[in-house]
Image (cartoon, rainbow, N blue to C red; front, side):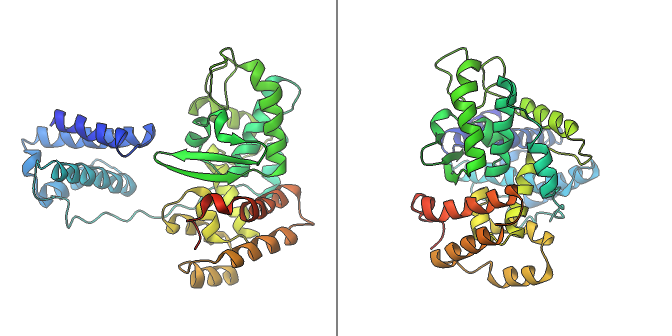
Length: 340
């Protein structure tokens, strides 16, 4: 089984181009399954649906969450489909096995005032302050995942055309940068980053004080530090900024399908979780329309109205809405397959 697991993981990395975090999740799930079948004297090549269900009962008794069990099923199913593909088995034992439906958690989000307060904390008085200002502005203005942000290279940013190219495995998407984010990012890239890096060959966009690519832990510590400086009592992580980005856009009239594209969600149901923060009228409208492909003209109109509506509101919300105007006018040709 060790050999087949290695081949499977190589396939995911080299053929499927999965990012390292996702790859490690698959590895943990499959190794845990391997431990179970070996301890119980089960030949994994002769496993049945009963074997899989028994394994999930074992995980449930061990106190594993429904979401964890669902992820395990997805990993094991992918493994057995790989074995079918390589002609090691003829039948997938996960066929007919139902995945438990985890309850949708309510995303933790910040109010627009809390976002403003957080973004005001880094002071551009030194190299670290300039970098931190750019990072927080960038995280909130793009809604990117922390792994996506720290994986960015300088070449992924186009300051002249004001967009960033985000890579997630084999997929990529272009995200526009609004003026406030662009200003902070330019200052960092032109004044701070050249001094922070020690190696001219370093490609990472965001680097630590040692001039090396910033880590997930480093990013989290920075967010936590400024959260405490702002005296915000809510728990804030980089992902909370992502949730806030999506929610604030939706609250100001942005199109749900466009938000899905910006966030990089493959399934719109992942984006619909933000609907719970809307009024009943807005919810009704989106429940009626979310499955319908939105035309370019409708989306452009929505974004223009959204920007106009935000004119007298705070700059953070205006910045978010302006982003969608940029997205429609300047970036639609870069994502032609998104909206038909």
